[in-house]
View 1 (cartoon, rainbow, N blue to C red):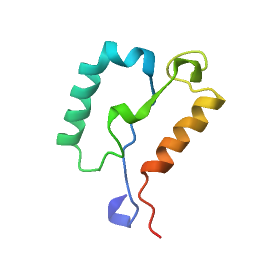
View 2 (view 1 turned 120 degrees about the vertical axis):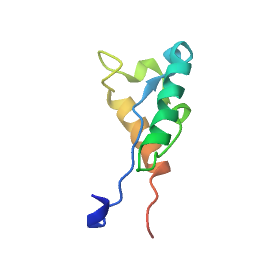
View 3 (view 1 turned 180 degrees about the horizontal axis):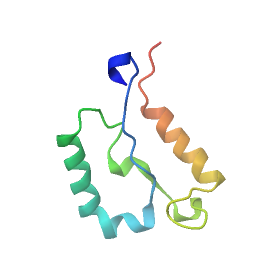
View 4 (view 1 turned 45 degrees about the vertical axis):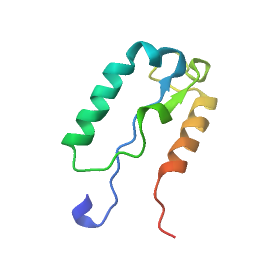
Length: 83
């Protein structure tokens, strides 16, 4: 995609704040691996993708309306727009 002129970024998924401390080391290890291995930039660190568990729908893979709005705001804050 970059060869066609498109900007490519990797955004981490939302993670429940209440669950982050249990998996902090694994998440950070994966983040470091991705930083070192990928040729595309990451938009933000794992701590920036934390949202309350109440913002997930039925599992920690599906954001509800509030969660989608919150995560969209996170993405918009880190996307490098060309003005």
